[in-house]
Amino acid sequence: MAVYKKTYTRWEGAPTREWSRFSVLTRYAFEDMRRKRILTIILLASCFWPLLCAGAIYLHHNLSALKLLEIDPSRIIPIDSKFFLFFLGVQSMFAFFLTAFVGPGLISPDLTNNALPTYLARPFSRAEYVFGKMAVLLILLSNVTWVPGLVLVTLQSYLSEGWFWENKRIAAGLFVGSMVWILVLSLLALALSAWVKWKPVAGALMFGTFFVMGAFGGAINEILRTRWGNLLNISHLIGAIWVSLFEEPMRRGAGAAFFRVARATEIPVWCCWVSLGVICGVCLWMLSKKIRGFEVVK
Image (tube, rainbow, N blue to C red; front, side):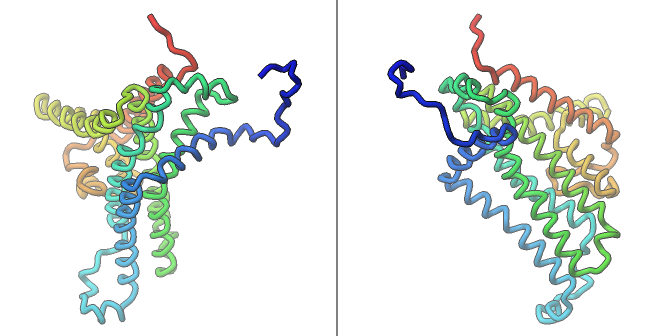
């Protein structure tokens, strides 16, 4: 609109705070996802296991209910680190499926429609753009993993006096272990979404990255008679870190079967941290190559 026509006026409203501008992207992404039924189905399915675990905790401390159901108290699963490790393993699988469904559609539409110049012409930095998209996954996956986990810890602490102070490492392990898994999933999903513009292929690559790399690492272990091939197995890396966070013996594994650490295949935990750091660094490098306000054509 031409300024000389005197119909142009500057914005008189309150400016958006700089620290929260990324949340605009998050809000509109959630508005788009709200209309997808499959997402609602996955979220509802992810509530089943926490409710079952809450029931197990309640029965563990209610002798009258056990007598009514004719359940032998000695057969009740103990509420310890193994219980919460298994809970985290199951919920993390739901987080994986959510990421495979939601993640590929976060960045690829903007690249397909050449919308990044429009976004970055606003007061958005590239880091804010990426964080605004990542916040969608951070919120979704947190509500599936560590949030219900800490609710279960609170329930157990309420029903068993003094339990929390004796097992406070479990609460810390749930939070830190979940955030490590969420960060790896989020960065990988955004990197694939930026490089693969077709969403079904990007979702399939999420599965391929975990299962194919794990199989390749297992092949290296078998051929070379070593255990260092596990550095390529993301599920093994995550499981080993969870074991160290919960102080659980390696021989019992970690979480569900997908994250189990087999006996005699352990590698030093610091190597697991370094390997995951390298994977996250590669994902950030991939994002930096694609998230730009212009496209270089050679």
